[in-house]
Length: 265
Image (cartoon, rainbow, N blue to C red):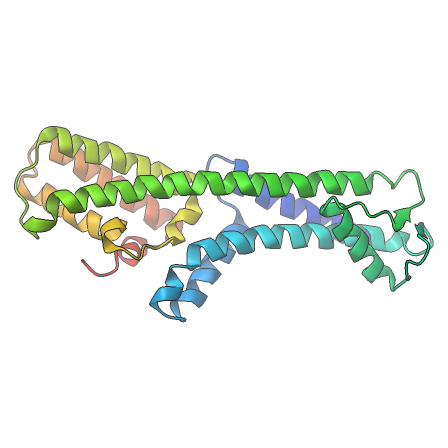
């Protein structure tokens, strides 16, 4: 029964991480954050081109880890029931209890339902459909997660490209910008800040095109504020920049802003 308790705990911790990553407003799943950070560390040691894969790899590996942990957790729950508590179909080989439990768990989580290994005890039969429901739910939620990530990246890229096209020719000494443009930048920066809170994994996505990169855009917006810091619109933009950097520092560490910025393009 100790093994089964460990399995229940593993399933519970996995579902907790899924909930905090996909459904909690703050979007802070411990496992997801750990995997995304690890993917970034590995990719930066593989070269500049590999950095572009850090974000997508982190998200993909997180989903795979959730499914594997879910399968392993239910396998540990099923181990005490095998082989005596299960019936094997004709021609189905009987392996070790853990291997059979792992197989049964994987079949259930993937909703394949082959039926060659079936738990006989009626009180435990509900485990297979329950795991299938959870597995299907995790996969569906992961797909929804992807649909949330890319709109956030589009908002970030759109802002960066707008700043680049407006200010690129002026270098570090841009002219005073129309108040409507500055207010628009401040509002869109606030949206990017919210995206970092709700979709923390987007921080690890990098751009191949510097015109789409947020880091250089932040530098250029600093220059806009410096041209005339007493204008109300510029003060609003400065506050938006400050909030964004505070969020990045609190969620990704003290060097997050410079880490995202990279070299000034």
